[in-house]
Length: 154
Image (tube, rainbow, N blue to C red; front, side):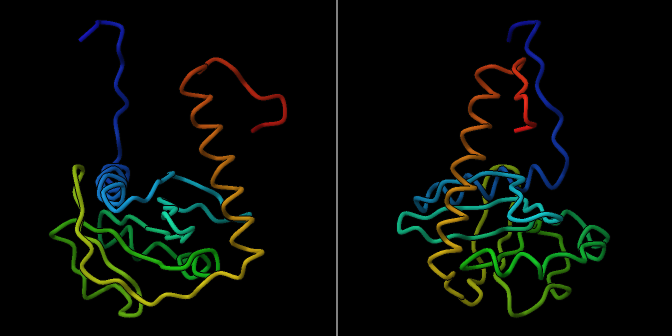
């Protein structure tokens, strides 16, 4: 490995997000992390399926992390399915029964419960797919040209 290569230190939730993203890629979903569907909300993983379905996955690394999340219900109007992703030692009895569940680590995940499907309205789906595409494009451009700063804040 080159001496000048600096690898980022990932937080526990980010490691779960990586495993979730890898797993969903195996189901033909593409994923972005830390997408803002609307002001005041930021989802851990948003996944776009081959038929345009939109899933949101919130990654929780501990009981305290879950208990401090007061915004998760605000994510429901922005996706067709909502999931929690937690590690194998997480006390899953804390999680709401009406949501999906993935057990994950930094390398993979397993869908344990699908949770209900609530189809997005076509207009909202269009907005979310556009946000997804712009977010992915900005991330790709930043990876290619990390020193470039957008004049309007991206």
